[in-house]
Image (cartoon, rainbow, N blue to C red; front, side, top):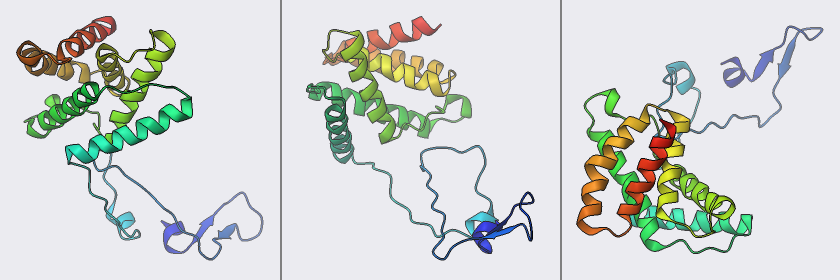
Length: 200
C-alpha cells in the first residue's frame, strides 16, 4: 500500500535511510479475469488506490468464434502447422463451453459449479492442446475425440473435482445430443468418457 500511495518502499537491508522512492511516472497495472473466482476479494484499501477499466466479457457466440478462430490461426502460424480446423469441431467447442457456463450459472451449490473459469482464453488453450496432440502424438488430423480429451485434461489440471461435473454433463447433455443429431457429438462423448476413465 505504501508503494501505491506514497510511491516508496522501505528496505531494511539497505544502508542509510532504507527507503527507495519511485521514479516519476511510476505506476502499477493489474489485471483480472472477471470469470475467474479469486481466493480472496480485493480489499477496499487496495481498490481505492486503483483506477478501474472494465472490459465486458464476450458473450456473443459469433464474436467468440471469431476470436477463437483468429487466435488459433495465429498459434498455427507460430508452430508452423498447416491445418484447417473443421467448422463442426469449432461449433462443438463453443457449444460445450456455453453449456458448461450455463450449468455453472444455474447451479444451486458450490459442489455443482466448475472451478475452471471457462473463459475464451481457456477455449483457445483447449483447442491448441488438441492440435499439438494431434500433430505430435496422432495422425495429424484434428479429431473431435482429441478435443474432448484436451477439455478433460484442462479441467483435471485445474481441479480434479471438476471431472465429476463434466461427467454429468457428458451423460445428461452430450449423450442425448449425440443420439439425436450426431454431427460429431458422438465422438466428443466417446473421447470425453475415455479421457475421464484413464484418469480414474
